Amino acid sequence: MHSPSGSEAATPPPLPPTSQPRRRDIYLGRIFGIPVSAGYSWLAIMGLLTWSLQRNLDAGFSGWAAGAFGAAMFLVGVLLHEVSHSVVAIRRGVPVKRIRLMVFGGVSELAHEARTPGDEFLIAASGPISSAAMGVLFLAATNLTSSAVLNPTLRWVGWINIWLAATNLLPGIPLDGGRVLRSAVWKATGNRVQATRVAARAGQALGAVVMLTGIVLFGWLGFDGLWIGFIGWILFGAASVAYSQPFTDNQLLDLPVDRVMRPVGAYVSPAAGIDTVDFGDEEILPVMGPWGEVLGVLHRSAVNPGTTPQVRDAMVAVRTAEIVESGTSVGQMLSVLGSRDFNAVVVAGGEPVGIVRPYELTEYSGRPT
Image 1: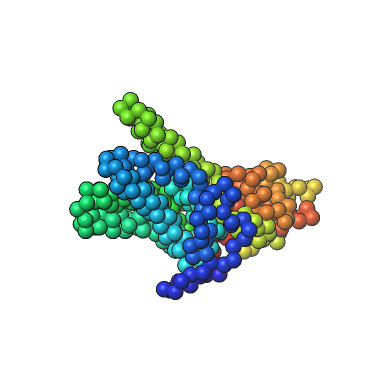
Image 2 (image 1 turned 135 degrees about the vertical axis):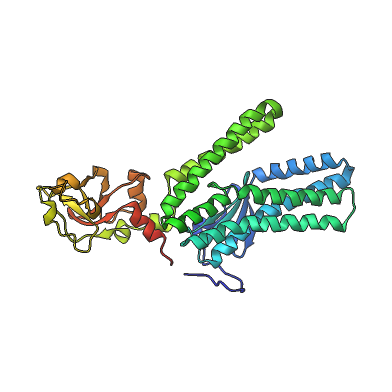
């Protein structure tokens, strides 16, 4: 179901109980019906920013007031960044469960991933665009005042939002730029899993560079260099998770494998001659042993009568873990198989009824709703 895509306000569907703010968070209210919360770490961040800003201003009580204002605007900027993601997601038919502000920024928790590369691009790019727009607005506002306290505060808020936009556009998951990169690769290849892995590898490379930079700068900057290295470690870890778990769409993971499999109506014997195999309209067939056991799969593209006279010579053997009972959820299957390439044969009553590969999961999850 798609939410309105025109200029009218978009209203998300009713939210499940799991979408309520976490008990350890500070509940900030709802925006467009979306629960918004912040981790308690934000209290420390707000205090630290207020202290840092007033220290640079050195203006007594007015410095503290300006520091609090600057810290609050930083919070508003991060929130606006996430709200932009959420509003665009809703308008592209992707419900949003919650917005959560965390120590390193924020996250908009979507009910499922974008269905098309175009939707992915729009959702990802909306955050940095809003941050850049807010930055330009605050920098322009510095022309409206010559106050020795307010002017530098407005300038700081402007540049911090532009910095937020720029860093988020770096091309690597989990940053928004990584999502933009994924949308481009997805568009070019038609394969969302391959696109996720490319963007995740880019994120790992980015994280490694930031870590190395932090180590190199540690001798000059001390704690600041260590902090940069820590941020790189966080980026590298998040990118590694994305690479190892390319399928994160909850709607897909909760489905039974029967919904996403490629149905098969026949199977072949490993002793059969290649030239006798009739694929019909199928691209892949299960290979069954004499005792009714699944031995492997035979791909049409692997058939070469000149070099592979029998099915057993061309088939791809399957592991026991790749034999999946009908009714098993996609999530359960992936928890066993992991992210590597696989040829899962779905069986019902001992008979093969379908085949699931990463291709089938990508094809299903990429369908428009």
